[in-house]
Length: 133
Image (tube, rainbow, N blue to C red; front, side):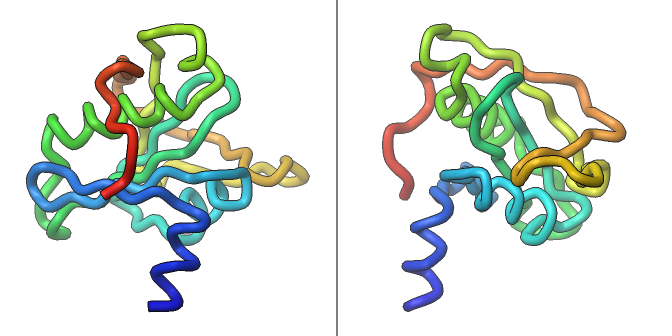
């Protein structure tokens, strides 16, 4: 119980349509934890260009990839929880497997480097849910 409450202070959690888990970081420290500590190599990481939340998508099983619907939901959440999403309804989202993220030496908290990106997605701020489930 205490762990779940501490998690909700750092992350918002959403459920994907096929059992995926989607986490959205609430601040720089949470973003770094998602990208560098909580992620599994095959988890899908997303971020809008510029300041914003890191989003991590985990499949329901290690043998399956997240559904297209879960990836779009995550992209919409990344757009909504970004600086760009405050003024734009569509935001380009960088997508990568977590195994392709690195922490540059001396970089500020929450900053990561993508060494191999997947095709980018477009996030729609008006299609992101308001509250975590």
